[in-house]
Image (cartoon, rainbow, N blue to C red; front, top):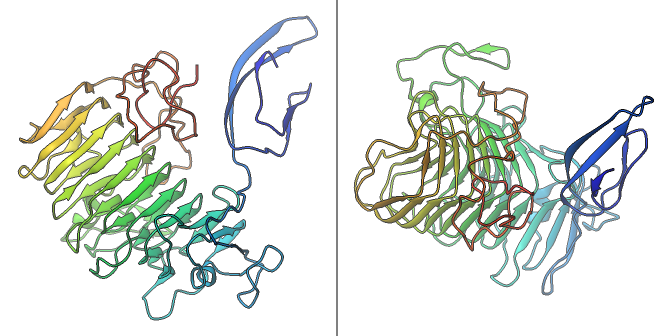
Length: 444
């Protein structure tokens, strides 16, 4: 190794094999140098990202619970005798409790009496002591909708709940939601962090009800550091699970009804929402984010990376309702259809800052910005030079690497935002003079 270091717990052998168990999570960069028998040398810079096991750290008077596919719901939920289902833990948690969910697939029967939902949170925490559910290892605990046979993965109808580091896939309607039947008594102060949310609603249908990775219909929600991709139903001629989707009279279901995040203030309200450090890609049956149909205040969309757009409509984000006292800043938009933002609604904006966003093969807005929107410092038609150009074919197997390359014009072009002190990988911002744009801060 010529310079830098591997994550703690890992070693690099003389034959080039990395081995060990990481004892800390994060990203590390290093340079490896090789010499052949003719004493010719070559050197290359590399990076590696690791995730360590989650450590149970309850707060206040909280306790630890454990869940494992090999456990039993008649167990006590301890490390030695874990529950089998996440719902069993959800039924007993109190403020300050932390639930460690071990590796495996969770697809137990839907909760009785609440429709086709795998997990329903009716117990929550407090402002000082949240209830926390976390995968023991990032993305190795999978919440599985069994190829659209379950409608919803996780419903939050209580307050102060954090959900971290799960994989969530295969649901017909949504992976995670805080819609609570129109009541304002639950589903607030929810944090959805570090999850891989994908392949929601990936089937053929002519119904027009939308499908979403995350459905938000209440106040005070933070969505941070997630990958949200491949959301939405099949277009005519597309083959899903061996079935060829056919055309219909109403084609809107595959053109603009399915979204990565759907912000719906039509039932109660959906204010104080922060979306930061997320990577959106191949959400091509709607938008990565839609705001509709009622007014929203204090929406903050910060340092996200958006890859691959809806080919049928403009933008990665559609603003379909009045928005006030909000900010869309420091984002990267890769190849939107015309512009990063779709101004579907043209009235009712006030104090909405759209600043320091970079758009590749497009402009920051599809059309003229309505009154009440301030544009500043945006970069149009600029290649951000990410490591891997994404394949925008729906359900493509590859996961794009959206880290910035040296020389990218997105480096040091961001606003200094107190809400985003670290990037997707947990790297402190800034590493240079100013914040980089998008979800990833370049480490020099």
